[in-house]
Amino acid sequence: TERIIIDCDPGVDDAAALMLAFGSSEVEILGITAVAGNIPLEKTEANARLICELANRTDIRVLQGCGRPLLYPDRAGVTVHGADGLGDIGLPRPTSAPAERTAVQFIIDQVRAAPGEVTLAVLGPMTNIAVALSIDPGIAPMIKRIVFMGGAAFCPGNIKERAEFNFYFDPHAAQAVVASGIPMVMFGLDVTHKAIITKERTERLKRLGKISGTIADMLTAYGAGDPCLHDPCVIAYLIEPEIFSGVEGFVEVDCNSPLAIGQSVVSVTPRELAGRAPNCLVMTEVDHDRLFALLEERYARVE
Ligand code: BDR
Ligand code: CA
Image (cartoon, rainbow, N blue to C red):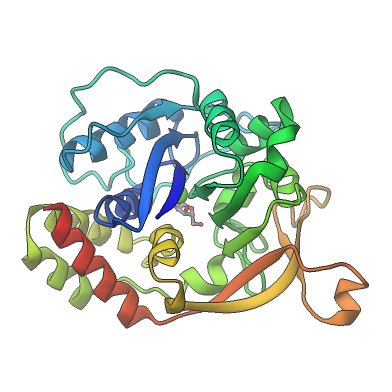
């Protein structure tokens, strides 16, 4: 089993990713760390607890992390997730108490407790990870790998012409993390835009049971604005990596251009690499039928 911390901003597709992890014994969830992104931190944190409650997984620790990006406090979230961040489908509020504000220290402690064994599954802006690396740079070589949703290597952005939302929301955090030397697997829009949420797929999910039905309702609401299953790709990769394929590249994030801030720049050819070794496996393809089959199978286990 892969020991993971899920760092996220739920978020409809984050919620779908959490449920996938809950149904999968290939991953051991050490904790869920919330960050500001799609919606403000108090909502992402509450939504993370709610998802745990809906799945009867209140044994999993949820922690609050950073409430704003490193430099841009006023970056607006996106609206496709609805006002409550979970598609406004009428979900209840969580009953548990708000989580401790110790996500960054939690990440540091977990990595130090098991050097080389902890994988960070990052589904939102990278603020928590960047701050952890800033407080304790010594953890960088101890992190097994970072598998993240963010960026767009060879395709346009989604929040800006050149930038994907997670990288745009906190470009400086993304820049710091991708430059950290930690082994990385990137799920950018190149691949997640190929994991399309269709009516047929949500209808199938809906018929499976209560949890799958809730996810289907969220995805239907969200899919109207952004019909792509981004964050679950990260968890699916940790369960069944063969579903995806990509290229080795060197990833950097631009923070200097007013037009392209938050853009991920990926060097692949020898000329582009100019002697640098690739720092990331950049995913570009997904077998989407297998991905949705995996979701169905695993959501059924959460019911
Ligand atoms: C990313 O932005 C968020 O809205 C989604 O949850 C995903 O992590 C896609 O650009
Ligand atoms: Ca997300």
